[in-house]
Length: 252
Image (cartoon, rainbow, N blue to C red; front, side, top):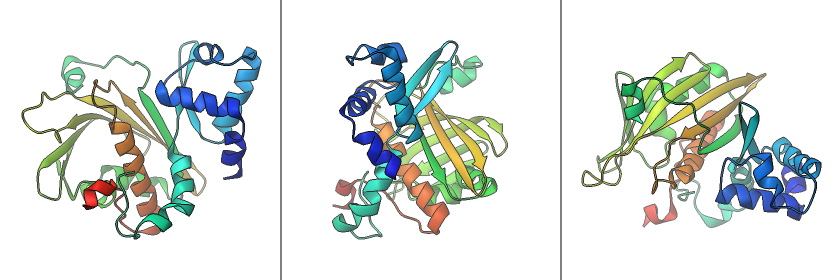
């Protein structure tokens, strides 16, 4: 927690975070032009932010792309702010085409997130692949069922919300899946994207990385949904409590 506040104390680092929030996946060259300092100076600031887990990076060829990782900030908010705002049991709302055509083109992610979870590798794998577990921590879904390699999520009123179809599994380490949203209803054209879970066991903990690719225009809000889902996953694995980090308006 100290490293988070140290990182946020510098205005240059806050400028970098603001820039990555507005435009995820920028390179060092992209970011350097936004600050009146040397390349080395920008690299030092990025190093502090990466050490605090406020940014995560994706390397592709000679380039390294940077992404805002808001989960540590959410955890700080959860620690002090959220208990003052609401009751514990009801928390606020904090291309299949590629699969069919062959191996998807490996572009850089549209956004990335990382969080440490105090659990075993087996427990995290189970939580990510088991339908009942998914229903326990997904921020809005009330049920989740499995049909083959597809996880099907439904809302409390039994409307189809989301289908995630696993396309490649590396047991206990990596899950590649399509992301097929249905919450807009049958009259809205269906546009799928894809995401990857990466599990890195580290002693008694696991580092979970999420990468989401090919997010269609108009679906940028899925990043907020991931923040809420991963917060629910972490809480569920570490405390055993099924907490729905759903939007405040969802309680009305």
